[in-house]
Amino acid sequence: MKIGVYGGTFNPPHLVHLISARFAMEYLGLDRLIFMPTGDPPHKELPAHSPPAQKRLEMMILAADSMLLPSRVEVDQMEVRREGKSYTADTLSELHEQYPDDELWLLMGTDMFLTLQNWKKPETICELAHLAAFARTQADTGEMLEIQGKYLSETFGAKCAVIQLPQITPVSSTQLRDLLEKGEGREYLPAAVYGYILRDALYGTHADLRNLNHEDMTACSLSMVYAKRHAHILGVAETAVDLARHWGEDEELAFRAGILHDCTKYLTLEEHLAICGKYGMELDDMERQSAKLLHSKTGAALARNLYGQPDEVYWAIYWHTTGKADMTKLEKIIYLADYMEPNRKFDGVEELRRLCYEDLDKALLLGVGMSIEDLNQRGVPIHKNTQAAMDWLLKHGKG
Image (cartoon, rainbow, N blue to C red; front, top):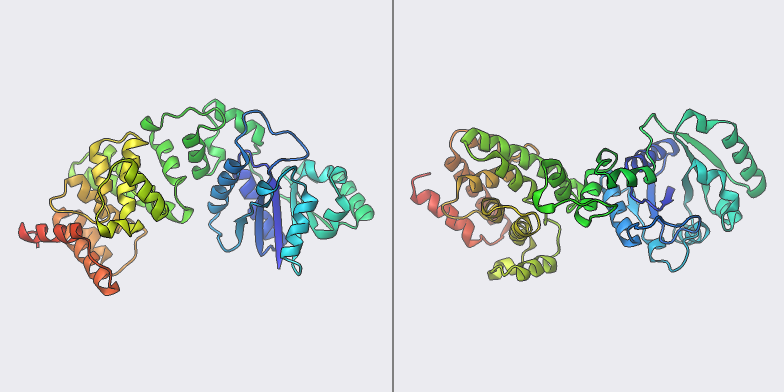
């Protein structure tokens, strides 16, 4: 197996890193790629006010996750956890112990490649891994890289490759940090990484989380979940706005509820319970044991208390999983948008979509009914609020 190792401070990780990594995987035929955020870099001091290593690691995890290659791309915490300077020779030695029969490729930028002979134990590095240098411009592929490759080969027995990257807008982490401090630069970052930066006020950003515009609220929401959930969240927000427009509901409230409805989807049960306890939310026995049920309550709590959303948005998120008796129009819209947004595929979804634009209550009856049927088939208890929603619809002649 061929494994690429891409190290760096990733301060912050940006799209050029990801484009380079993906291109290297194709060019070298890598089976796996390991991002290796540096803990304490030996070759340079981190700039003042840089985030601690743990936060750089968390941003790199979000960036790697955005590649949507979970079986092939991972982030290793080895150097972040290691005490003292993060030397590449030590890292490769540990990786060689883990993967003794695999071929390691060390990926690096041009500047690093040209100075590798000055690193600690360059002979060990060249013995344990092949070297691949990224060339971002045609000028990078000139005589200097050829001379350096020949030198490393003759001196340390290195096997070297130069990866000519496609034409991309170059940006350094230094430039990006300066842009972020000015309120610019989001176009160079995965949305989830940008949202993380805003939520933690990194790199001189000063976003008011209680008064975010659509783009920033979207980024913050996506930063709290796995990338595989992004398409669903965006689909719900888009569908909710469209339904709100169709039924004369507030489109702005529909967007906010839609984009935040799943922001706590991947918290652990313990984390859900802690949020509910913090905000004094009453729970029944079924909810105390189910993260799936609790994510709507904790999502509502953060929408209100972290992102400053009004009661209409709070309750629309609160009820989007179970439903309830006598729902408001916005609550119905979010419940249904969550059920039938464009990425959903199941028997009956097209009929549900059609009804959503003809009769909200009939659509709700169908949706709640399908949910109850699915729970019954899987042997999962029906929450009392879901049953109450069905009973109310039937009692008021919506069947």
